[in-house]
Image (cartoon, rainbow, N blue to C red; front, side, top):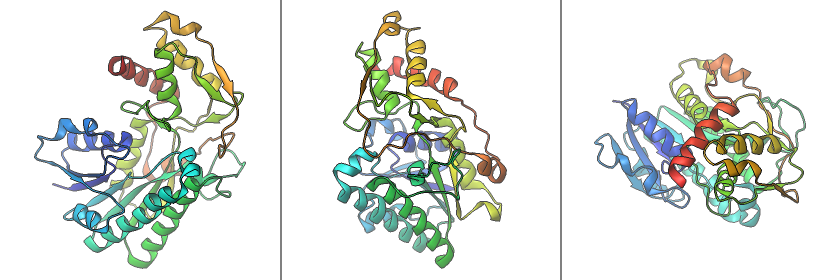
Length: 322
């Protein structure tokens, strides 16, 4: 049995990966300090003999070394996300996202891990105005968070060249779906909007609503992690990939979708007005990915467009949040 370490495995993306790979017959080790993840995301696996939880912190080298023992692959999801959080507290974001990342790379190298697949970010494109975003054209970072995720890519490249460990970075584009937390100061926009609409509150859009994003459903992200972990093509490793759909949706259109799909459960939601506020510091106006590289080298085929993904996500939230 192959064994996978999923750091941040109690978080939104990590817990979905944990469930998927356990169902596929892998052994899964989760390393999480529960700073942003939740025990309830993985508690259904506690009785599974193929599952192991290590409560620890990637800022602690000993925890990293313990977690990689006997592991074939690392899916590194642990990080402090959110541009606003990094602007408010750049020191902690740096400690987790850079020092913690380096700790995990060192531990994986020393343990002889076959491949290190890590969560990179579309924020790396920074102030580049070119669309669609292609992997080898980036701009200057616009936030401390973006800096940390770019440094991750630099460290991964150096470790691949210097020590021979196989690395693949997945630049996530606005991931959403089942299990994403709608609460807290740094909640992602889709679960936040869903919660507000379900509570008959007006969603607040930063700006005029014409900023656009390549919203990416969780199942597409799972597919990319699996393909990156298992590819045996030499030219497909030691690089980075956009992890997205290849389509963009404005925030105004996003809310139209959400109101339409939620009103099937509660007709009053269709009439809830939207409130517009100031633009948010560090935000880029538009984000649209080219997924040609992933399709060519990894055989990636997105299964969920924005509308299909939102329908599934809205159903999950309606059934689990009321």
